[in-house]
Image 1 (cartoon, rainbow, N blue to C red):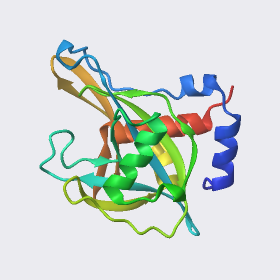
Image 2 (image 1 turned 90 degrees about the horizontal axis):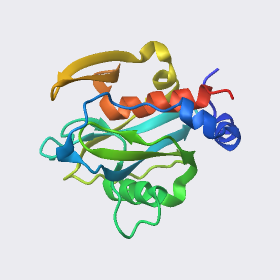
Image 3 (image 1 turned 135 degrees about the horizontal axis):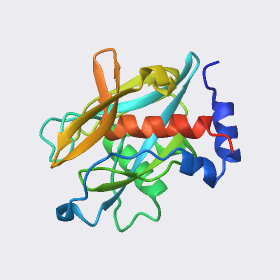
Length: 202
């Protein structure tokens, strides 16, 4: 059965720290002293509650950005001094990047820290988003916003595993191609973490 909002609420309310540990996913790269310490960041994993089923709101970053240009991503960014928590960072960034009203976001919880080979320590914040959506994209950062069915992204059959030589080490990453969009890297990794978390049993 496709996941429902009620089931997700139950999973996040009942799962333990052990479930979080079981769901951890990270990129496999050799440590690089030039990018230490890691930069704290947070993203919102926005699960849109549609009548036809839950979807995930994703963005495509503009091509001129310094970090992860052109990639598919969640709304999010670096933690700022004024942010009281990663949740605040995720909600603030989602409002700035796509105009998502934080009052429409029902925060369910957080997933394990995701460390990237590009020097970020990301906390994924999972939230249900209640329509209607009146998105206003930040043209500097966001080229496009689109929705992908959650059940597609949670299906392990759609989780491709790849590896590539990177900075003298072997980097392994996930990819989930969907209708012309290539969802990969940190975004795909955090979706795999979500799938593991929801399926975890203590």
